Length: 213
Image (cartoon, helix red, strand yellow):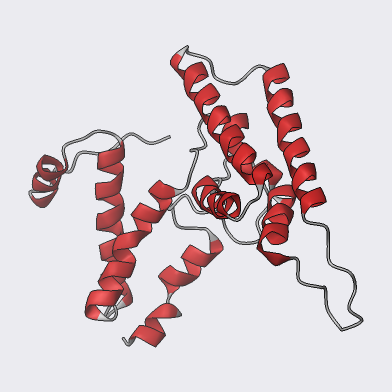
């Protein structure tokens, strides 16, 4: 099976549809408590805007990190959620900083040409932060949602590495087996189980079964 054909295969369709357990948020899906907020990419963009002289970006970055620390402290104290008044205060500061950002980056005047005028990098970032506020702050509402999507990126990285090295998977069956093995190893690591010992047991027909939700 060639690389182009593999891109249209069943696994890639499942990945785009959000059926694979990578922790990625399916494109176009609605916000939910289980949404994996892509804070890492947001922080990178905020850092860029900070370097370009956007003070609100620096303050918003610091606010997100402050919320992260607050969630970590609450979890360490055995709490399952932040107090409602604390969440309202954080959300209010988030909205206020976005308003400052919009005032510093007003929408461009209509040009008379077809289509919406370009907002620029800062304007586009502000629009995304406002439109996806629920996803951005999901980690504050639900402690089971990670602060960033780094784990999801690591989980799917080996699939891309395999594609780059060999160019493709030869069969759907081989691709499915590869993903099943990688998924099993990833789950073992997340649950603190010894990977080599588990694989050895699996080879002789007695695989340790990770805990399920």
